[in-house]
Image 1 (cartoon, rainbow, N blue to C red):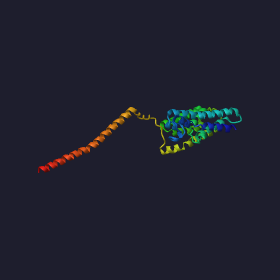
Image 2 (cartoon, rainbow, N blue to C red):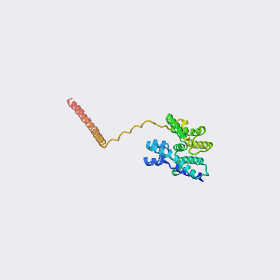
Image 3 (cartoon, rainbow, N blue to C red):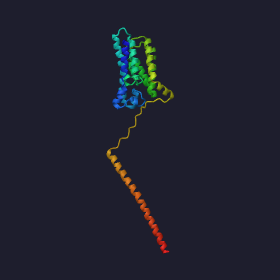
Image 4 (cartoon, rainbow, N blue to C red):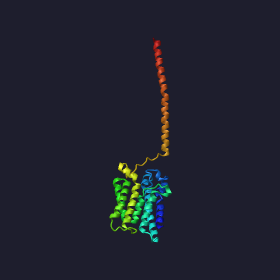
Length: 266
C-alpha cells in the first residue's frame, strides 16, 4: 500500500506544470501554444524570458526533490517496505507526472529538470556530475536536448561504475541500476523527436547573442509634425498638377495667334 501511495503522490506533484502556470501569469499565454510546444524551461526561455525560465527551472527541480522526500518520510512509517524502492518509485512517477500531467491534459515537459532534482536529492555527487556534463555539452553544441540526453545516458553508467555511492536511502546496486536505466529510458524517450532532428542536422540551438533592440516608438508631436508635412507636400503636388495644363493651354493660344498673324501679313 505504501508503494501505491508514494507513486500517486509523486505523480500528482509531477503533474503541477510550473511552466504553464508561470507563462500564463507572466506572459498571458500557455507556453505549449508557442515555440516548440514543450512545457519546459527551455521553451519558456525562448518564448517568455529569462526570469520566467529560471523560475520554471527551480520549480521543476523542486518537484523531484519534494516527491523523493515525501516517499522517504512514508518509508519511515512503513517499516515493512523497502525504502530504496519507495524513493525509486517516487522518482520515476514524478517524472512521468511531469511528462503526462493529469491537471494539464497529459501534455507536459520532458522531465529533465525534475530528473535533476531527483538525482540531487538521492545522490548529490552523481547529480552534480550529470549537471556539469550536460552543461558542457550544451556549451559546446548549443543544443539543450543533446546535453539532456547525454546526462541521461551518463547516470546509469555512474551508478554501475561508481564505488561507495552514498545514496539518500541505501539499497542494492542492482535496484539502483534498474532505476537508473528506467529514468534514462524515460528522458531519452521524451527526446525522441529531438534525436531525429539531431541526426538530420536541424535541431534547434540556443543563441547567446543579445537580441537587437526594437526601434523606439515615435512620440505624438513627432507623428503630428510628420502628418502636417505630408499634407503640405500633397497640396503642393496637387497645385502643380492643376497648373501644368493651364501653362500648356496658354502656350497653345500663343502659337495659334502667331500663326494667324503670319497669315494676315501674307
